[in-house]
Length: 627
Image 1 (tube, rainbow, N blue to C red):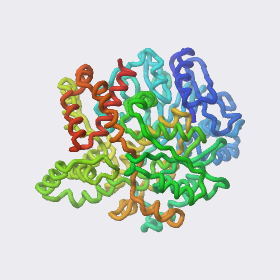
Image 2 (image 1 turned 120 degrees about the vertical axis):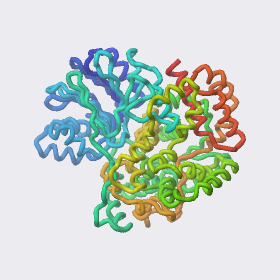
Image 3 (image 1 turned 45 degrees about the horizontal axis):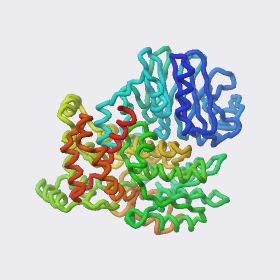
């Protein structure tokens, strides 16, 4: 795991060095620069594989290609064997040179089709004078780029590398702001900065003679299932060896390795499969809370799972000062990122890095196997969307008057969101459930000038667009596809990467293995979720391998007593970050609407903690990057 930076179309060694140095947190073990005419590549290394021979940027054996690579290729040993058998010369033992030799042997598309891993890399072909940027299938590893006025291209693992150039337009992109307030992240290809773009997951970019081309090389579209997979047991039999192989591949490491363990199905299954092949105790890590977070507490179950597998278990009790952690959080993303789960990842990653360099996580289990309650909501909505409008309005009114607690598993909050989207078309319905602020709510928040500016541009949720894109699949398959493209890639994986790499911790996500994701793309809704159970295939695979308590548990998720922490910080927030005068000075939002959100939240009528936090993060970002 590393940080990469570079440029093409311009020779500027000082800028290249500054861009590379800005990513030191991603790779504290070493650095390297390559400068050849109009191309420059920089690299910060976190040494995980081939500790002695993996320095980068790395040139091919014949000197005709050079690469700067962030990530891990988990099937590199098999690919290395193929390349050696084909006569390719390989001088090192790690995965980086496999990229170089694989590109020269198979070409870029042939190479990408064979990779099982997480990566973002820049590869320069000296013979054709072509630069290739490529990003892994689900966007586990990030990659940003910017085109300067003279046509030169800058790129880096994080925006901070590009911001080393004074030529970058740092202005706030208003369409990205609108998307952020809905989703709490900015979906690619945009970023919050007008002058910076994201290379989307599963895409490559080619720069040649000043011309750029961007192409999607992988797409997790729903597909017809193998006709032999007609039962839950058949699906479990097909998935188990793929999942087992994915976990095994993800444990290849030359440095200490562990796993996050919450006691939920996803993380427990990973620990179980790791323990099967390990001849020493697995190092596991968990967060918990004091009495104020009792409804979010998972440590007792995590302890029992750790004991079941003989793991070396460590726990961290959190009591977060929101404002104290706010600046490091924003600095880690360089963009506003509104999911407060990032706070937990920040603390857990720092704690875990004290003991190991690599940690496996359960990210992706919900999207791949069907774990979110909203998937069941889709199945229910197919029947209830035709209910009389008067009945739905009555139920919505009752829920609005009942108020909303800020504890975990709030049925009232879930029911309100479910009913709010029930009368919408399926794509917009799902977008409403995934988003945090529908179009009309965002319009109320905006100042008159911003409302007018955004009203002139057509807007459709990126979630709705992704849900509607496949030409095959039931509603749950389509939702899973939209989440792979959006929520998983841009919320879960982005948060995990930034917060872990802020502490030079490599997090690996076996459920995001490309082969596993492609297999599960064919699983129909009944194989994923029913009224009685979610993640049905994974539960069947792990039957007999996990304690029954874990197999029967309802989903809790990576949650915390954020409402309590927010209430504690409210006086300072109201007096500073979200003071009406400060909001008016920015000119983006209506101070009265922000105060209305605070009022409803204080009274317990509605839980607006997520939306308020997104505004707090945005204000902190403006102070650090826009002022």
